Length: 394
Image (cartoon, rainbow, N blue to C red; front, side, top):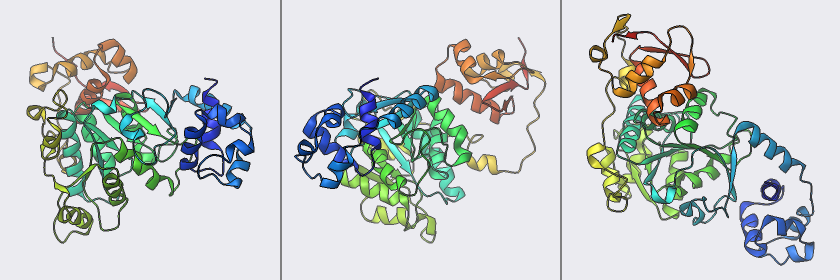
């Protein structure tokens, strides 16, 4: 922990950019050595300016200590570029972040077929339906779905991955405790439970327009491919696609109507050589031999019609559920049966308690709860707590 304060000092020191920090690490080896170097030694670093060397004379560690305290309070940990767990795939891009804040369980990215799914915030119902379906298909076939946590396409793809019981990864352009946009707070919590949240910004860092294009290099850097689901001609998603190409990654896109402004960027990407995707395996077949133990075409599934965006948009009468019914009558899976029997009709239960009591992996618990809620068999309360609406007959 004591060494981390020097990492945080270097990462948060004003007047430096990430490339300067990386150059200092190459020259000195560790942030602690940078901290104790004098100005003459600092000026020997390739590319450093006198102004930057003078900025490094600020040896105040109070901000670093405050961040360490915040991370402990918020259950976040810090991963540095010199840690063995730091993904080699990300380390090898031009401008890797010196450190990452992490909440959740970090997958072994170098062994995963991770796919960044991006698109416009101002998406259409077509785009949302495609993103959910593809996120679900990618995750069910064994891929890791990476998103930027934005409203629209990013959120829809993440929801699809979570519904499939897969691993979702969210890369934020702010502190992991800030929840931007606010309506995605529940999504943040679900991803932290079933996958991992990442940011190069410390707790409390507010969203800033400059952060998001910078964040995009992490999305594509963690992934073997970037999939653009819906994007107009001017879109941050196209910036991510361009960054992916610069990093030597593959780019795929979902086609849209030729007269749809929201699909103009995707259609142009396809014209310029991006892979055309209409289902998850269109993309994953390119990596099946590279990740034979991870990807399985026979497991790539379509999102159930009762769960998709289009189904939720239908103006239908609420489902009439009897106060008690058998598991067979309700068409429940084994996971859903276990969870429904653990839930009480009056006292809400926390997700963490359900995970502990059931012994079912977190991703499967979240997926089963989502299906039960959509089917009006359970009710969600504030704080991700649940009660049952129907009781099971023995």
